Length: 70
Image 1 (cartoon, one colour):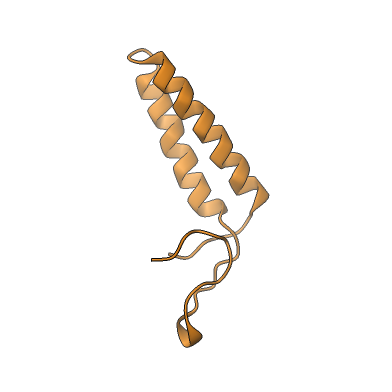
Image 2 (tube, rainbow, N blue to C red):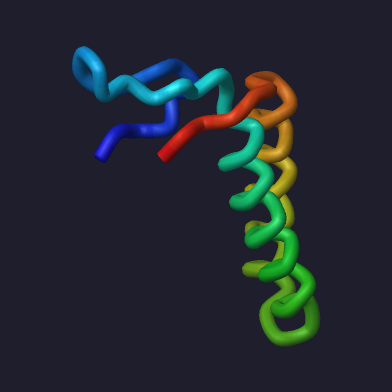
């Protein structure tokens, strides 16, 4: 298991072709945003936390375009 860094990882012939991390960040941002919508009426404070996390990870993806192969 390798962390998502946006750079190729692995050993010798088994290195992946990661070029960024926008694809992973986008998946997390979408999940956090959906959670924020689902919890908006049930737990507004938690929904705000999820929305903040969605914006943060979305910005991370914008800063590191490309795909991280897992």
